[in-house]
Image 1: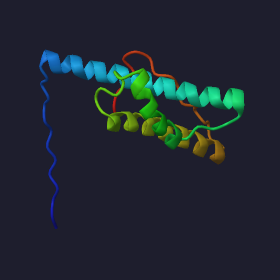
Image 2 (image 1 turned 135 degrees about the vertical axis):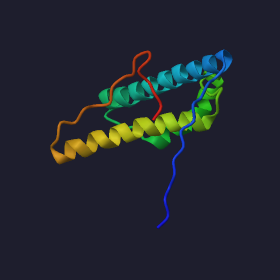
Image 3 (image 1 turned 180 degrees about the horizontal axis):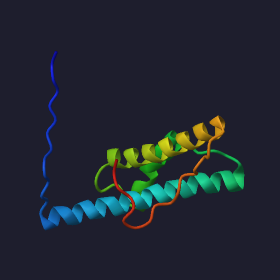
Length: 115
């Protein structure tokens, strides 16, 4: 029988790295809230659902309008959109199962922590 070992590493970012991490977190929180607003508004006004794939296609157009959002790369943005998509999948799964649904919420300052 083999055993798996886990290691924990203490990250000690410099003040410059810490500022970059905070900037990244704030930009991704803004993207999450904007994508959530797009999904809610699209359904409210047009009764049209917006998928993860629809939103990832719009990232290319976002580059010309808000290049700062994509400063850390498109992969990070896709991860944020995937996180929102998982929240909606859980919401619809709970609705279907008859549980208390818990609609995805907007994230306030300091509440957007990566998973």
